[in-house]
Length: 193
Image (cartoon, rainbow, N blue to C red; front, side):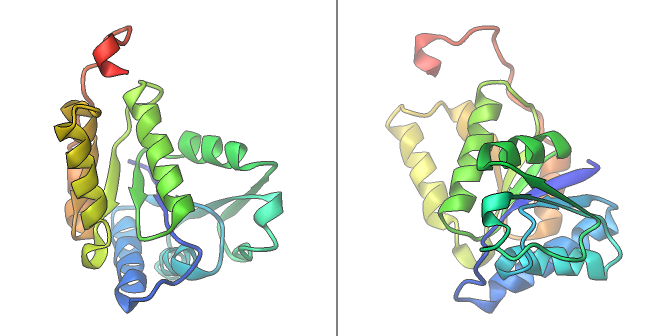
């Protein structure tokens, strides 16, 4: 993996562990010579992960829509910044630039980006690993809800298993490195929709 996209909040969140996890993930990315692709902001968890990658001498690519360039305060020091016209363009470019995807704590935008990239994987639009870094149990209830979806037969187990989970950056990156996407049939059956 040459570049990992990290979805995370433009707010710092309540716990100091969120920033600490962003910094720990950044250190692992730099140690493995993996570039960061992210939403381009200099604030919140987003700013923390970018600052830490840059401080470690790593590569950072930001992708930010024009409309958010004022609200999210674009990072002035990233290696490369792409300013795009819409959120759709942002997400498409982030997918194209990345070899895998990790969610750190964040709000609706983080969750929306995570679920869209997982849906793209389910539909076979990409075959890249997707992971949750479960910081201080932040994603515990989300993972339980996905298990509930499987139990209710609204989510196929092979698609639930596409979302890798770990408590540490090293464990998550190791799982992502070993990821094998599920076999995809050429067409979906009624049960897979």
